[in-house]
Structure formats: C-alpha cells, structure tokens
Image (cartoon, rainbow, N blue to C red; front, side):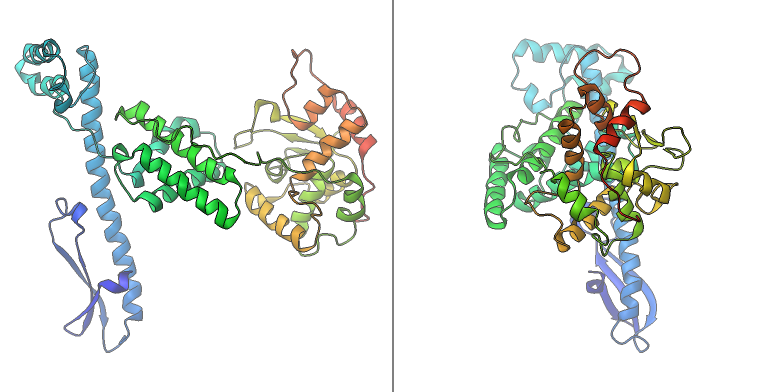
Length: 437
C-alpha cells in the first residue's frame, strides 16, 4: 500500500520507497523520495497525503514496468535476430552450453561459419552460430501479455466485450497457476508443477462442489498459451499441460423449459418483477426467435426490420465476430418477439456488447423469482426450447438450421428458406403473447 511509503520529514509528508531489486540495475536511485507538499500539521493522520502518495506510487510503478518491458523487448529482439541468422547459416539456434554437448564436427562447422563472415559482421555471426545470446527470460506473470501479442492478428475483429471474454479466462488460469506454484520463468515450469496444479484443482473441486470443467478450462488455456509461446520463441518448453483433464465435466448442456411452462409462467404478467423494460424485452425477443443472448443484445435499428413485408431481424457481425459462419441469418418476428421489437425499434443500447452482464442479471432475477424449476436451467434454455418446439412440429432440418444458425450437413444449393417460409413455421409454434411487453 502507498501508505506504507509515507514518512514525516521537516513537518511535511514525503513519499519514500526503495527501488525493487528486479529493477535496481535500471533505476540506480536506491531510494525514491518525493514530497507530497502536504504539511503534517494540516493532515496529522496522513489521509490527504496518502491519496497523493497513491498517485506517485502508481506513476512510479508504471515507470519501472516500462523499464522492465524495454529490457525484455530488447532481449527478445536480440534472441529472435540470432535465431534467424542461425537458420540462415543452416543451423538450429542453440545456446553455447548446448552447443558444447554437440558432436565435434558440428561444433567445428559452426566455428568455421562464424569466422568466414566479414569482420564487420563477425560478432553477429558468432552470436548466431555459437549461441552467445541468452534465451530471454519470460515469467509466468508475463505469459498472457506475450501470448496476446502473438495473437494480435487473430483478435482484430473482436468487439471489446468479446476481447474481454477472450482475455479473462486466460488471465484467471495464469493467476491460479501462480497462486499454486509461484511466479517462475516459463522455462522452469515442469510437469511436476502442472500435476501439483491439477491436485490443487481436485481439492478445490471437492471442497467447493465445482464442475470439473471449471478446472479443465484452466488446463486448456495454459496448454494453448505454452504451445503458442514455444512455437514463437522456441524456448524448449515441454507439453506439461497436456492430458490433464479431470473426468466428470458436464459439457455445459442446458436443460430446455417445457413449452407450457413458458406460456403459463414466463409469459405471465409481472413474471420478471425486478427487471427493467429493456432486459425483459430481450427475453421476449429470444422466446420466438431462438437468438443467442449476444445476438439479441447487439441488434440495432439497421438490423431490426419492422417495415418489411415480413418483419424480421438480421443477425450479422456488425463490429463483432460471429460465433460461426452460419450464425449470420434472418429471422422473422412473430408473437411476443414482434411486440418486443416494436417496443425497442432501435435495439437495446443499455446492453449492447454487454450480454454477459445481462445474463448474470436475468439469471439472478429468474432464480429469486423461482422461474428455474429444474436444476441446470438458465436463460439460455429458451434457445433449446425454441429448437425443441420446431422439432415437435416436424419443421424441415434445413429450415431449423437456418433459424438456429447451425451448419446444415448437406451441400448447400440455392438461397435457402425464404422469410415467408420461416414465418409460416414460426407462426405454428408461436405462444399467446402477454397483453403488454
């Protein structure tokens, strides 16, 4: 805490902090001292001074992080350049301690290659052929940042909320691993460390009665990140997080609502007491369309077509990545979903790109209002019910796939089902809507 770095000096509060060891060779001040300009007599308990110290401390830590990142980037740049030069010479890049263990003919070949280069490039040739550039040290606490940098091209079309969903599980997996084994260089992480992490998760699953897939996601994210780092930096990392799965995961299958339950309970007046109008109308929109929550939340006035001969919504990327190529589709509006869209012709700005937040709110309200009668049911269960209702009236498989945004496992010919055809089938399963939405 910044309060720990406050001291009284000549009647004034001062910020005072020793430079951490890991950055001492880059910042040689030893101790950093700075006046808060707040007199002790005016602030005897240091409350105001602590707020100023918070800002000083934040700026100082940012400065130190910049110094460390600069050193790390320089080391990685030198290492990458040496690897590329070694490949140009026809060798794999190895550090000199590993080269010393290679057969003598290979060692001599590397020496001859280095010495054959012009004098102005000899140092570079020696560093590449004889491995004098050390492998850059990458700490576990830096693992995600490096992985995100390597993944930049894959993340270009993600919306802010999608990027958050992409980041958070990986950050959580790294944080959990560091909690168990500490912050170490990634090159020193062993299979034994990984198995210790698995044992930690097994104990936590038992104690907290969690689904095993909660742990399995951590293993998967770590495995993916370590593999990506190895491909890019060639640090010699082992596949320590492979084959770690804990059996018994639920695979995330939601349980559908009974259609009668939706009609009698979920579409009853004041069923969703405690929810604001926008949140309630998102639910109504999903009932007759089977939209994913994120698809519903991100509709706009351009993608809600109420004036068309067949009122419908258009699901498209619109600044975010689609879950699948088949997710792009047009869905007619009938019944309560048509009423909800008419009440929100410009979409749901309060929840745009905030589907996860809305899901948490709605599920909490549904739980408190006793609207989830079967364990495992959630708001998303409405989408499963939508598919079940189409199945019950024997809708064609191609039409169901077009409405659900699923892949149709046969060669695609023509334009697919028309809006009129989709509307006809949706009217067959439409609920009796409430008097108002």
